[in-house]
Amino acid sequence: MDAVRVALLREVLAGTEWIAATRRFAGSLRSALAPHGGGLLLVGSAGYEPWHLAAHLDDEAAWSGLPELSPTLVRHRVPAGAPPHLAVGPGRLAAAGRGATLLVVTPERPDAGLLERVHDARRNGATVLALDSGDRDLHTLAHDALTTAPPPPGTATHSTPDANPDLPPGLEAVPLLDLDTVQHLVSAAAGENSRPAPRHHRRFRDRLARLAEGLSAPPPPRW
Image (cartoon, rainbow, N blue to C red):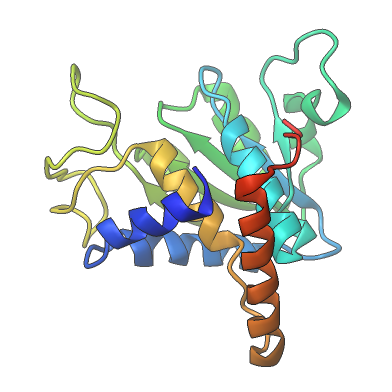
């Protein structure tokens, strides 16, 4: 989803709590990151790998001038011959400590092994964030979390007008958004500048110019 589609999505969702919620969560992510800290670790569940979010955050890191947004994707299974930036296994979580940020993204319930690694990372001083379907055990470990509950069985995984009582307060009666859509909103919000005003406007114009160039001639994908 490019910047134009994200802007259109925000227009559709204007008046709901999703825009504020995703920007708040993105703010928590930015606040947890330090330019010379332990880095951003992005991990999913055994059945869900958030490589798409990894790619978008990597792009936002380049466009916004915030290199700390570029994540390390932690994979449960690393295929043979994977390039170095896609060959980081779950053992990396054991080294996550003070200064590191761990973002857990999954639509399904994390297994006990993942929860144990997340618990160890938090105990060692890492900041834990969760973007998921509302798992209570994971939310107990997270310093901040954003819930996108899955649609009822048998329905499409895209946005639906059905109300969802499992969402956080303020989001119960708004359209249900699938996890992929919310990831786009969060990654876009994470790249929004929060620097002093004089540089903000110049950097924002520069970013718009780069986005326009990207729409006509996108660079080769890294992921």
